[in-house]
Length: 390
Length: 195
Image (cartoon, rainbow over the protein chains, first blue to last red):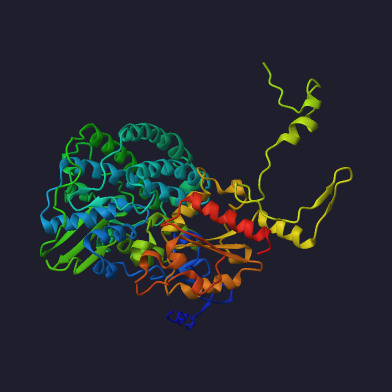
């Protein structure tokens, strides 16, 4: 075993003495949040420099979950890499797989059968729902509500059950393949999805919105908290629901179309202009409703045929490089892949994790905030540390 | 028609709750599920005055095994399954172990759920040392058990048992919530044996 002795970060800096109005001498305080903290959603560590209740400076410390995914991509074959792409954003695995498989298809020039594309859209949107459900539940916990967590996991379990029937695993599915998907839909699966969607649609209005949207405590904690103006959001390279919560109408499904999204008529990005935590909540709930519509349209138009392109017994990726992006649950998931045409492994596979780019704004957004708001703001950013550290 | 399954000497007699119903309850094992019967020193119970004869060790082990509080130490993918186990569908509170503590000082069991990196390893060790005795560790998932699919990664620990003693290993990537239950029940078995 290699040595695990790692030098503790030196946090003993000189703190300026502040004279308060009453003549009391106070000092700035350094508060360590994490890496083991229930509201950092994983293993993020924040070093907060506090003046009383106010955050003067926030330094995020990352890397506690750095598993070397991008290096591992280079050591595994193209097909094995799909399984590791799962691990990056482990809450919405299917979307990562889509980006990885899409990059391979872009290099190899593979035509994906239309049925596979429709299946991909269905599982992508279900995965997006699963991710937003986890976010909604844990965000409820962050601001002090326990019930949404139980309700959201109840609906998420149904999605996971259907995924399990589809590909045999509840998480880390390994379902995508270059040129299609691994298995066709099981018999009666679409009926199950439709029945679930009916109930899920009711649940969103009846449960989540009723318990949170009109809840005074929830409104107090979120409205006007953590506001990101549109220009700042663009400058920091934020994508996904956070960007649309700041009023920027940018959705890769429509603006950089992939798969069969251009053919879906119900695709209208959910945009709210306020930019605060409540707007981000509304965007994510709106995306769940949009996902329901998209899945229904995809099921209605689902064509027959093969679910995987014929690539021969041993498929060899030709020489080339490609950057393929997917609108993930947290933003733009991109894979930049280089293949030299000889090796069975990619020479390089760079992953653009949206959580990492979205987390960049944390120091800006937390400066001058109360420490009680830190949890509410961090929760609304919706990052997954597996994707931040990779 | 009512079928009277009672023994011959009780047939025809009006049903007595104490005699006929309670006596016929199925015998469950100590562990709760249908595992192997734990060879415990069964206390002799006198029925009239409710005096229990046992050893202090047995009593303490029994009390400890019932409701260990886990430290919610979610690191990666397995953390999501750990939360699912605590959620409404799987409902860990059926076994009395749903009280996830955020502070190690209030916890009995550390569930290491996820990949432990070299950067995280000293923190994990420190959290383990902060837990009060007696304490147990469950390695949840392949990564925490043996390195799993990150067996050749340059930045992950190859099994959490290289830095803390592990009592129960739960296999899977990630393990299903049912697998975590099995692990927790195995731990309960181990504690009630005095482990």
